[in-house]
Image (cartoon, rainbow, N blue to C red; front, top):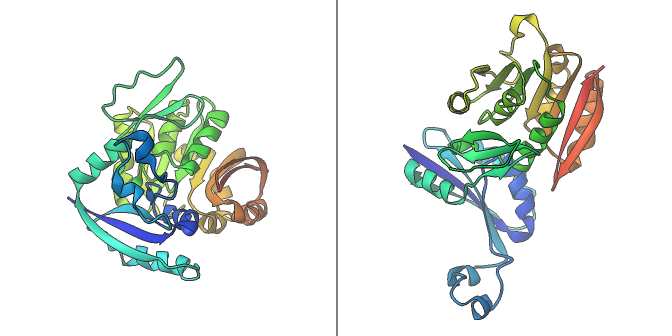
Length: 307
């Protein structure tokens, strides 16, 4: 199977903005940034620092995602251009084709066990990580186009799930990607989890990861946001996670309440700090009260309780 590396080259000063926009397409980012490479480092560290890194252009950086070859990249490129067209500074887009084995091996080189909460730890499938007492291990095959589950927005959601999931809860994850949040909720005690995504390939990945972790109580299905979501046994959800982007959360805010029980919560993430107040206002209008918030870098995640 072939994979396309969609790479945006940009000025280093604009790296954070480009990374935020690319993360709206996929949370599995590969970033090339040599701005911190030390001048004359080899004089101190001998041959430890590659000469090509030291000689790289410190004013330029790049952000890449990986997309299955069968997926038309026209929409991705249009999305990138529409969000970057007003960006001061030069940027350009490259498409690089690679084999699946090359992609997996490249990810495994850098993909290590990562703690995403107090006890939640994401571990690459097959790793002999032993952990510590109380750890909740989540095995994850690098999700190809869906990343490793360790992005800031995912960690924010995972931290809130540790805080709010109770034994027996029903949980819904909208835009689930690799299914990592539903797996977290299941292992934290939820009795039923629904994980939906508009992309059938994402849903296939969700099912594989749920099976890998022995989470038989996760229902994975294709849905354009809430269009095909139903209430299992007629029961509204105790917890809903929406790790998407501000615009989509705002779009869902007026209808998501129909799927949440009174006193239930919605965890929103994928929101840059500059859009936080917009999301807050939309969720308030939808009948929710903000009760908690966490920040990580330029991202924020909120917890909204249904009145």
